[in-house]
Image (tube, rainbow, N blue to C red; front, side, top):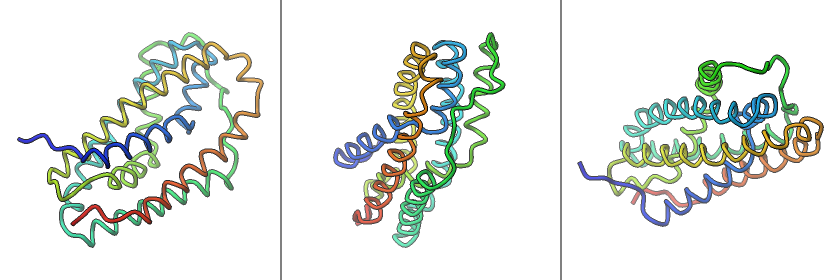
Length: 216
């Protein structure tokens, strides 16, 4: 079977958008911070492996669910595209105007086993419906249906996003482990984070809504 990936232009936009999203902390990063601050960077890195193993499950689900829809018709493609754009904007608005997400460290105890760290990270991400909806909203924006191999393109983009996520989250884990004491005492970072994250998501949603359809 021929290996099909999005064209250079779409792939470049995807990489740029993915990196912007990943360097802006979200709920998973706050969880990694909490683990790393309390137990050191090793605990954070193991949690990351669990989190992104669950990410692969979401990628597989998005691949199976979207491939038939996107390949079926221009109308179906447009519905998914604009629904995804609206969802990204909604995430941004909720991030800005919703309740603040504090750094949760209550109940996190030191010396948790590596297996438990991995399992908890996996469950945290697997049972987060926002993660599944995010992939359903985000990945279709960069698929070029006219090239064929829609499922392969979605899977490739999802795997690439997962690899980038492991790298960027690992940087946060190492930083949080090294600066744990200071991070636990500083609320400034988390106040700024909600605005940066919200603006990024709103910008991506507007860009996706105004961009041309990938279908010929």
